[in-house]
Length: 68
Image (cartoon, rainbow, N blue to C red; front, side):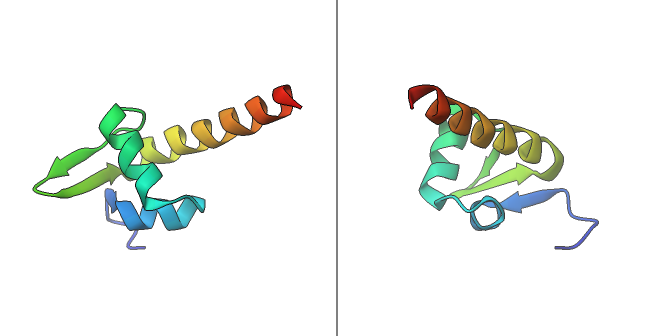
């Protein structure tokens, strides 16, 4: 990924975190992660997306442990 880029697309976010593109889009629609929609495409600010996605993943992992 180009270090000068400030945004990632849906596919890049999904691949980076091993989650489905559908999940990334749903989080964007709900406002769970910061995103901008330009036309039909979602774009995600790299730094703030990293923080939010890692928080979501960690939150899900903690919830699973609590449910055990």
